[in-house]
Image 1 (cartoon, rainbow, N blue to C red):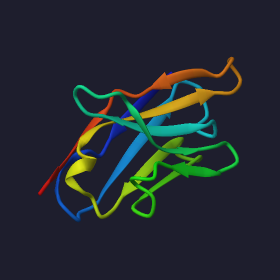
Image 2 (cartoon, rainbow, N blue to C red):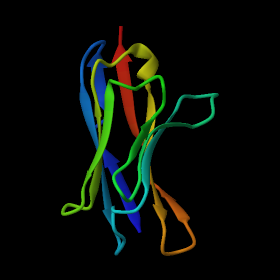
Image 3 (cartoon, rainbow, N blue to C red):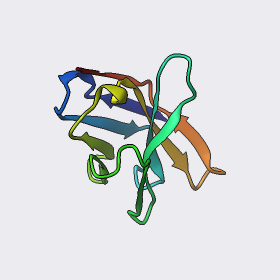
Image 4 (cartoon, helix red, strand yellow):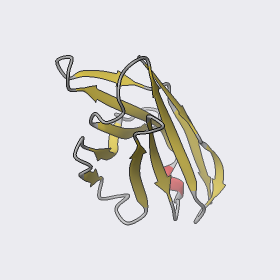
Length: 117
């Protein structure tokens, strides 16, 4: 099983980015998935999650600005990030929880998002 995250980059304050997480290896993206982020010296934090039924949840710091979604046909999850702020700068990781294999957790490799002021 592999999760390939992409879409990070450098953007100015107020800009937008869309992160993608392609799931491969015989596992469906219609499992609970999430995006986390981490800055050096801090714990990885949950940014957004999407359940198998499509229900979503967001950290207070990104509500109204970020949107998590998935395209089951492409086996891909997305994180649309709008109105970006310098404090959103971090490495973003996608995560999948396999409901059929004892809720095993898989992580992508991370993609850097840098928001300049």
